[in-house]
Image 1 (spheres, rainbow, N blue to C red):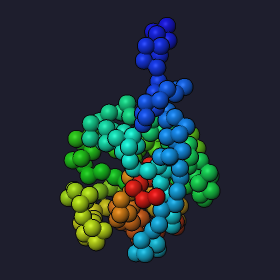
Image 2 (tube, rainbow, N blue to C red):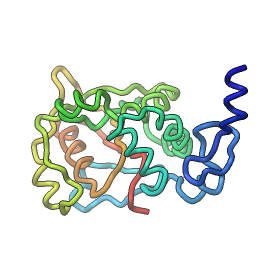
Image 3 (cartoon, rainbow, N blue to C red):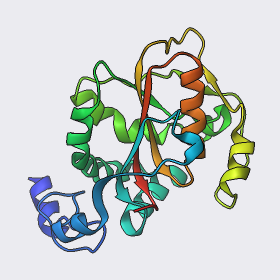
Length: 216
């Protein structure tokens, strides 16, 4: 009864434009069409041999950007239901990837993981992947904290990230097909370095999904 009353007083609205929607946390159809669609991202030439494909599910702008920032920097897990609804556009791409497939979240540095209390890539992708029988495995660790990268060029990012990832203790990537997952992709330097680490450890193919990207 309380739920019905709350729905009447505070009806669900699109997190982007505030239009009324049927279910709380869902985007309205026009905003879904404008902000959300799965698209393959161009791989830099120096990443082609390490990353076998990269896809983004949404554009990093407006409510998508705001929800991700609320999750990462304000620890608002209430943003997750809306973010989870975006993943449905990736069903066909996921179905086309080889099996068995191991999903690996891009790891946070230990200090940042303690401060945040969670890895946003895991929070976003784990339930959806689990519904497809794909578990997340912490095959990678970040060996050191890196400087903020958002104002750096790709070359500067590559330099800063070199050697920042390693295979986790007792992890085995040899011969595996791996799906990296992360929240956003900007230059691709982080995904490339993670993929390179996995390929050096013997991974067969490495793909990547990101929830959002600034690149169309």
